[in-house]
Image (cartoon, rainbow, N blue to C red):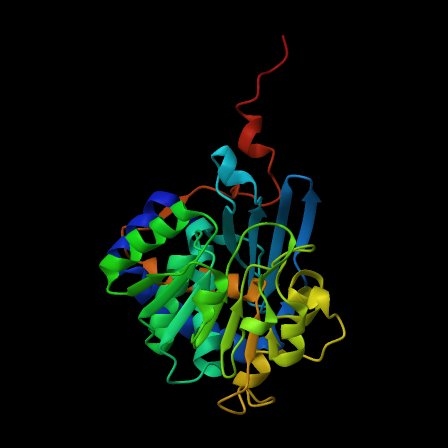
Length: 342
């Protein structure tokens, strides 16, 4: 049998545990896996692009467990009544190839993206960071706020979005959770005096939602919206001003802000964790995490959910793999039931 967490149980588990507590626990799993980065079999995600959006497979393996995520990205979906991103993921036993855990990952992807942002910021942002600016108030924004409170203690948020309904949703969701939320009239107003800037917009375009002249010394930029070819958010000049960190360089050069500066020297973040490279080197240094999302993060998130729900009512068994009594006789499962000739 394969263990399975469906949407209903994922929602129940997150509500019962608390998203901020989940993000905190997931950050620990992420850091464990990033520290053993070199032990993973890795590849850039496999993408199928259409005029409507992209569908991707994201695989990773540590030679004991294989994981993959199926995920789409369709920026025009909300206008048609659909979500921009949906996903599911699988863990499999490398030794026999059997899938052992299956989970919804639409909500889980939001949690793991936020947890990754928080984990990185804990090592790159100034420790005394207290104010965060968000450009983009879509589906990821609330999770990002919770992650930065978990990682750095940030409780003061300033938000800007071209969609007033998205801003209203953001304020409505976060005020009851103890945040101080300010609504800016522009991106420039939002980032003025910010310690951390998160850009999380959805449009598939080479946009500039954060011009270089708005970026102040010492800020940490968490750029998570530029996650596919032809989609960026930052003024390319920022890349030359900042110390840039990425997940997996072969993928980031295809999909991230690095599209605007493909030859720029950057650091893969795992190297900071193991002491191979420096993180922030001064208080006034600008640090930039050019995040596109990578399969090892999904591997960590799926491991965390599997371990967290084991022995609870939030997981069930499904009969996903045909298992004949004689492994060589697959036809035997149906042969006795198949209709015979006239």
